[in-house]
Length: 172
Image (tube, rainbow, N blue to C red):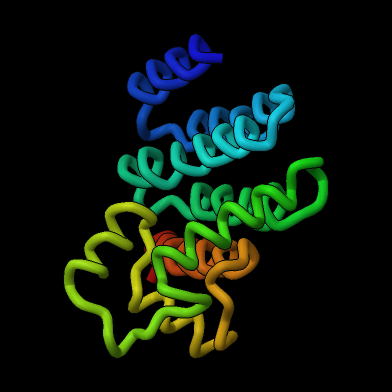
């Protein structure tokens, strides 16, 4: 499995603008490799690795590609939020604990965010409080400990990219 990580690292470095490569390797980690593990902790590590590959690396090279946002949202909605994996409860518990620690509960207090907290959210999770607030205003208030909320957040971000891409593609 560690060889798999090394190979995916090399391939994504050789073709950083090819979103299909990022999507494949993230999916492989989150779906194929994770289920080969017997312990929920090990499975969760691979699911997170797949998600982080897209979020932290893929988006760095392809920030305007709606496909990668869709893939991240799909991992949240299907793999973490769904019931297709035997360890789905463990994934939900781990994510809820992580977000509760990060946000100080189920939802952020947007009025009390300091610059250091905002910087950490963006650096560590690519969570933009301004966009989170927009999603909350449109569909909430939402419980940000839930994977479905994060699926919605990533869909929101991807929709913004898709709309921008479409407006560039339509001739005037």
